[in-house]
Image 1 (spheres, one colour):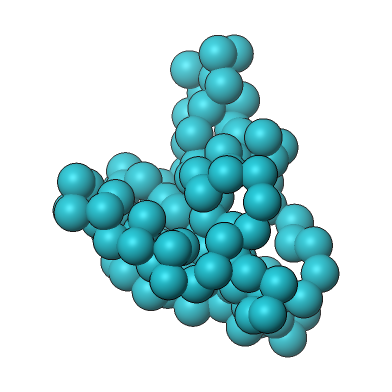
Image 2: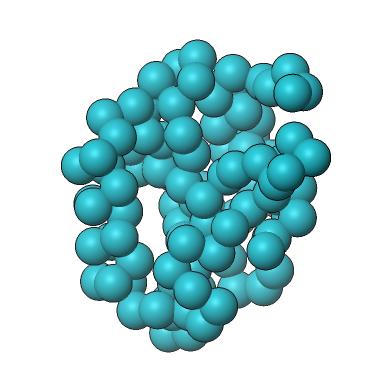
Length: 110
């Protein structure tokens, strides 16, 4: 297992990265600073939303799973998914990024 950056620090770095690019990114929900799971909601307004779940593959590499499926969903469906996950995991972090184009996250999106 590879060492990982604490969740709170990773989220701060993500927010700073997009702030420097003038892309709105907001912490919607704060989780456990050390080891909380992280969801990223990519909001493309009229084109829908995608929720990504940070996880590891079998080799231990960081990957992002398309938690709401391969195709974008409407914002209400994305928010409902996030609410269900938050109900199960009180340590969950949620970051929302408003992006018209592609975004760059550490790891592969699957």
